[in-house]
Image (cartoon, rainbow, N blue to C red; front, side, top):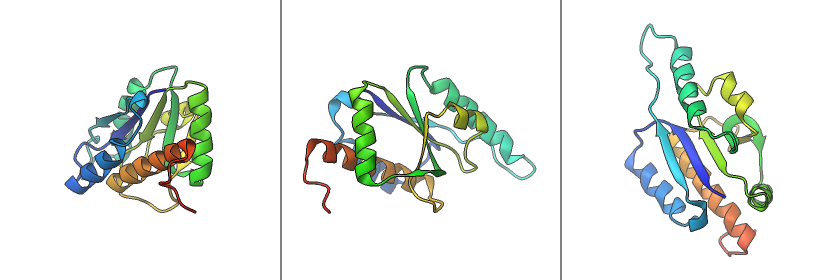
Length: 156
C-alpha cells in the first residue's frame, strides 16, 4: 500500500512543515508516503473564486490514479474516531489499496472531485487553516497506524 497526500497550497509556514514532517517521518517505509502540492488557483478582486477552485480541482483529478482509493478531506464528510480510522486503514491495507488523500483549496473542491472520491473524511466540523489540516491529517494517520500495530502512542 502506498499513500499520498495531494494538497492545494504550496507555501506553508515553517511550523507546518516541521510538524508535518515530524509525523510523516514516523510512517512505515512501505507506505512510501508522498506529499504532492498543487499551487493555489488565482484569486484576486474581480476574479470568480470558482474559477480558481475549478483549476485546482482539474489538477487534483489529473494526479489521481484510477486504481487509487481517493479520500477527500472536507468538513462536510464523515467524522471518525481514531479507532474507527485505524480499522478503516487496516481494511485498506488488507486489500492492498493505494490511497490518495486530498485537501482542496480555500474554497474547497469542485463537484467532480467529490464524485471521484471513494470516501469523504471530516477532520472537524470547524473550518481549519490548510496547514493545520495537514498536520492534523498526518498525526491522525500516524495514530491510526500505531493503533494497528499495538504501539503505545495512543492512550485512552
